[in-house]
Length: 335
Ligand SMILES: Nc1nc2c(ncn2[C@@H]2O[C@H](COP(=O)(O)OP(=O)(O)OP(=O)(O)O)[C@@H](O)[C@H]2O)c(=O)[nH]1
Image (cartoon, rainbow, N blue to C red; front, side, top):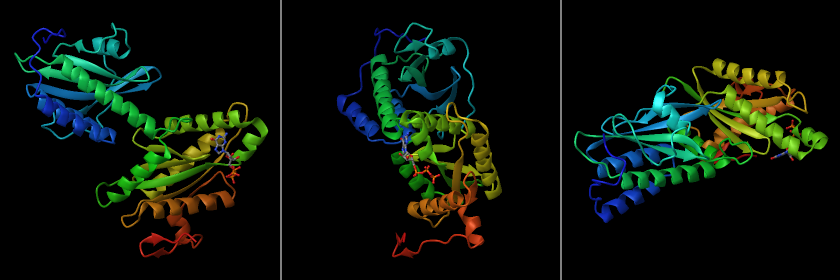
């Protein structure tokens, strides 16, 4: 088993090599590419080691984990099942073990990465038979990765609700619109959701209770939608959902289910809250502004036809209830 002390530390790679790796690592702006860059760097600097990255998510105080990236000789793994770790790993994640930067395991070493004092990822390093790990280098790169993850999280999150913010939404929509053609059986959709008569909540109960409602709605969205669905605070009392579904009917049913759930579970102090939703499918030839405009028209229709309901742009269009804005020379003519 490798040592966690600094004895037998192998010589560090040349400084220019490390600096090049850091430049590469810190150029990333997406969590996934940041992770791939970290593992690529570690593999280059520690060629005798097998390195895996596990991500952690916390549900009701329990840490679930799943392998995120394996030895980079293989394709990065995505959407592996979440499992509950056991034994020593569970104690490390729950921070019941003495708080250390690096831990010996049965096969090698593990380095937990933290966000807001919770473990969010774990690097597992397994050296080959008689190789020695440069612990100092491993810890330093893990900490740089952790710092960047935290920066990324802060720049992508809405401070009130904790959902993704508008900046993240714009980036995600742009990348989704770009890759829809024939990649999956599941259809991508954008839904825009707006709280009904929210001004009355502020007027009747005050802005602080209004904020509380926004926070609780965001939590109910997180509980209802899947972990792979993108949830965003789009603006004031408006939210966006980027999700996939097998059909338009199923997408409608999912969103109606959420509408019903919100209307049927009163909010503390303010009672019943309802939401209106408009959604659209992400077509191959659409640009982000067109997609948003379609969802927004469907939302406006829901608002002006009784609220507390879900409408899809394409269905309304077929019925002649809404029409597309004209596209002039590649720009959207909104009026
Ligand atoms: N508490 C709180 N209120 C906000 C926030 N952002 C926007 N609002 C309020 O949201 C309200 C939106 O009001 P309107 O656009 O008139 O819409 P509405 O009352 O929800 O009515 P409909 O959308 O037509 O159903 C305004 O009173 C804003 O002040 C926020 O961050 N916190």
